[in-house]
Length: 105
Image (cartoon, rainbow, N blue to C red; front, top):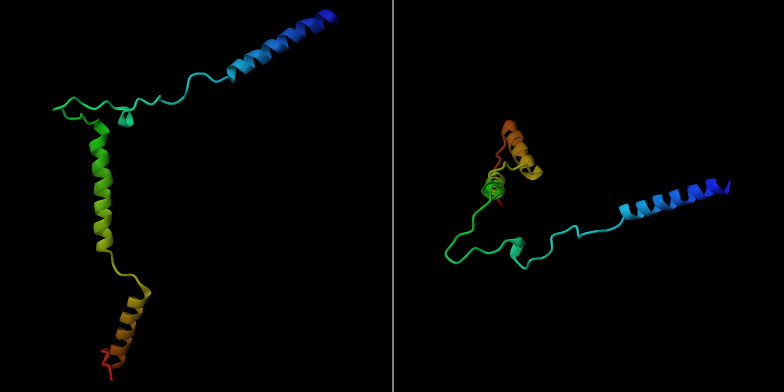
């Protein structure tokens, strides 16, 4: 009976130790700071920075999309309830034969 208990105890301690090692930390999971902006070393004097392939597409997509949104917002139709009511009132007054112009008295 003691032999079976002694066999089981070391197995359980080994499993606990393995589990603790598996859950342990390790190397940092982030890039160590290098002191350069975005981790890029600046080019030598007289040389230009080489763009990555996605950068041009991102600039066109971002700023082109913002420009398109600005143009669409500028030319969007007026959908306010006040202008709709004004046009509806003018149409009804003209249908009755009244003048739709306001003249202050």
